[in-house]
Length: 459
Image (cartoon, rainbow, N blue to C red; front, top):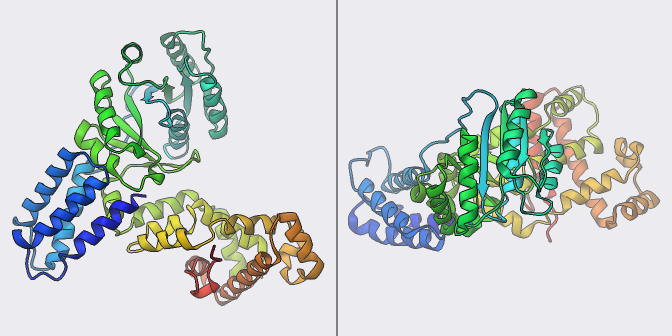
């Protein structure tokens, strides 16, 4: 995400490297390029002006340390200012209330509000260990209530049924009563998508807020609308006392204008980022980590957290014991490893979070056949259990049957078998080496084209 901004800022900051010291003259050109990079990223003009001026003052001030080069000092200043403009630190939800703690979710039409409600419910259930009920007060959009009911079933939280013939205030008051009866910790209320210029709808949500008195009022906004996202949030904030923002579609946003503008323009913290279509694709917003990623320095902490949450520990431990005992690494194990990597966002998702690997992630996205992982899984599924445990049996007619069943080509299957064999050799070397060696070895499977492991297939 934010590839364009990251590329431009990285390019701008290179020009200051190698300077003997920081002066107003030699940082002027760099600051001009930084300004242009932010404007092209659709960051709000007042935010750009304040940002550039703050960087200039801090770079020329007392923060220069003898232990750092001028280039390192300037980078440190830019990173600190990026963090500051986005809020400084992560702000958690405040759920300190007598249950159920009510969260009101508002937003524009098409911003991903209902999906965000389901993502938030899943987040609170799985990471915060809360019992959650969701309810839809959207009586205007056909199928909105049914959509939330389906999503609630998917993420495994309680759904309070409502009807389009009811008034929103009546719906939420009944939902609160039911949430108390079912001992829910949190009640999340989905509201109708509305436009800030629609006075009648804005009045309705103000009345809804007054009746609910929620502990959190979250505004859902599409990151791809750039600084318009910040302006819209500001207008909503004049009607509703917003406590936080959920920025959606961040994974598709190459600019980053919304993330850098919202906090400064509205004074409201971004609390979550929507980073994909899956209900698990909601991340707490950490300004320091995002600033690091924007500057190409990776986000190792998020990668570690993601591994803790998404890697199947039982399968990993089972494989570690199997390898330690010298047993054969078969295609079922290989499929599990592909699935684990897919859960972590695939090879590009992992590279993007590693220091200095942002460009590699982009190159991988451009040059690798990203559908190959899915095809590998389908090919393995098309095999018999005996073939998965004994890949050496796969030849001739078996290959033709597997490729017909999976809709692939024989060369795809040959490539899969070759990569599995290389992975198998790697695992043999780890006999008795424990989990750490095994996890390091898994990295060889995702080597760059032409690197260890033969590389992944190009487009």
